[in-house]
Length: 421
Image 1: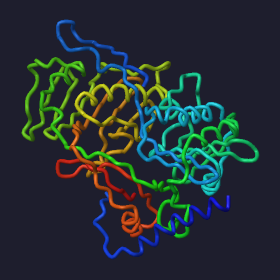
Image 2 (image 1 turned 90 degrees about the horizontal axis):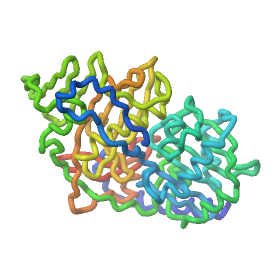
Image 3 (image 1 turned 90 degrees about the vertical axis):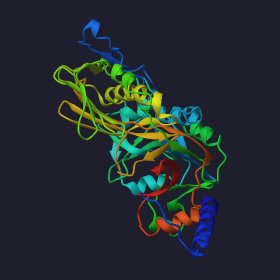
Image 4 (image 1 turned 135 degrees about the horizontal axis):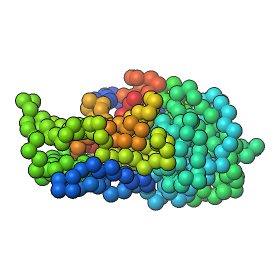
């Protein structure tokens, strides 16, 4: 263990030496399984399709680190749908979530200490209910972790008393529970990875004072493609209207003074704005419902049902991007879910900080929907990331923030860069 700490310290010290030798700083950009039931209420002669979208699997970006006695393996460009994640990392996390019992509160510092030893680390970028995370991992209804607990970062760690699962929302809330995962099975997973090519900011002297301690720094940053921004609705919007149950030949459609096209069907409305965003309101008789066992969907049912709808609506025109769930909030019988875009496990950031989609459910009914359509096509070249020492130098100007990689739209392009937030 002492040799492991010494190796990590040397790695980070080498980074710092390079960092201090820089004479200039480059400008840093800071910048599923459930389908929808339909209650059509539409005349048979109206003509619109009554299917919002085929069922599609909802995936999420996830950053992982595998820690053994001689270093770490790290990956910052994975999704829960990747085969390389599903087995063995996803399967082991699903086992831990399904068997964890008697969660007790602990300090984030305990999480960080456990991260120093043999462990599997998962960062889902945003804090989500455990039941939703289980659904993203492919867990069925028989796997029912607590819905009242949420986590962004999860850790399966081997300890003398057994294998524990740690949950941390990234803030003050941190929990620990024992699991049925065996130490041998955890060692087998760790043994499948080549260790030593990644580090956390907390691993070396000095960086933990500069960055969020869980900033995952890959030994070799991934090679990420660059993309051009196309016009996703250039071919027309008839398909979208049909998917949402509207008649594309409706006479009750006109263009407002600001360029927004308004389509009405009774008290249902769709507004299509010039920036390729749309706003749908269901009126008093919602046409779409998420499939749920009760009158109020569980967080899992709401997330996977809404995600299935969005994947079907956005994927035909979005190119390389897929939607992923960033936020789920509930007040009474109203559930609001916000989604972003991700490309190959790397999240896309909009300049205005907005979302790709917002879904509002009242009970099980879809009552409002906002979509920001995008089309990402290959640019034929890779994004140019700053060397890690330069990125560290710039990030040091804002102590305590997390250094990560994300896609950012700018001037008709979408390129990966280092982000500090």
